[in-house]
Amino acid sequence: MSVVKVGFIGVGGVAGGHLRNISNNENSTLVAICDVNEGLLARRKEEFNVPTTYTNYRTMLEREQLGAVYVCVPPFAHGDIELEVAKAGVPLFVEKPVELHMDAALRKYEAIRDAGIVNAAGYCVRYMDTVDIMRNRLEGHAVELASGFYMGGMPGGPGHWWQQVNKSGGQLVEQSTHILDLARYVVGEVEAVGGAFVRRVPFNESADVENASIASLYFENGAVGTITSACNISQGFGTGLNLFAKNFIIEYTYGGMKVRGEGDPETFKTGNDMYAAEDAVFIDAVRSGDKSAIRSDYRDAVKSLEVSLLARQASEKRAVIETTFRG
Image (cartoon, rainbow, N blue to C red; front, side):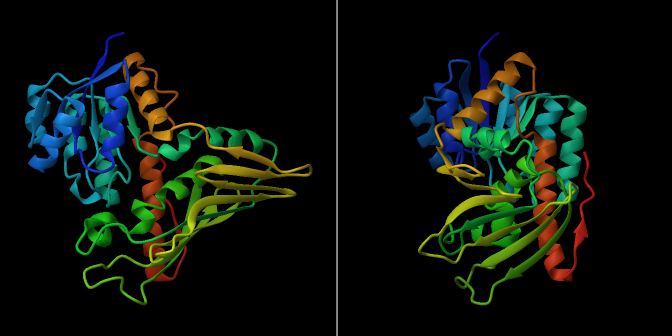
């Protein structure tokens, strides 16, 4: 199998790790990168020894013979990128959140599905080795309550896109989505969503994201859950997911996990690089055509997006709203 020639659309913050992983993978090579920020492009070109740069992704797609494309743009900047990549028939990796609007996400899902291309989404937490252990330990236990949290400070400075709801979607959509998605991955699909969002004290004059929120999850299998988010905690707090079953508890964080059953508690430390793992799986899938090892594809990412978007709608209506996307 040949080495995969990879192009990037968007080379800012989150792209850095992917660029490093692709450049270090013997089965892939960076051939082109694209970004509207020419200064950033020049730095990434030198940092990763990339042959060609572009400021227009359509030009890159027309001129380069790409084996795969990474889309690492901010949530508000996706536009028609995925539609154009799917039309070109190029395998696609899209960072989360994949969209801010369900109608656009559904159009892109259908285009990607109909193109039949290998595709993946950046829900990297699914690739942690402790998540494998978690899923194994959950066998034979019916989770009744999932309690997730993502608690910390406000990313970016005044005017940064993350602090604008119409550009980031807010913390649940852009950040806590990792924990929401993990809950879906280990507990099951969500059939209905409730929500409560609050912004009593604005973080700064330009920020309009909520300071805190709670998403209530009603799983198809009968379990219930909450995802609690806060971006107003300058001291930091943490990120994790606690799972409760009869006489059985899992306490999970990015750094490790504790399993409490009838015997002595078991403690596990996270031992792998989740970003490197997801990138290696994607490149292997592109080379072989076997998508079975991809843990989150575009379809799955749209499901997590829908749940997070419905939470805000539920908060506004003070109601519980059923999910509709089945894919």
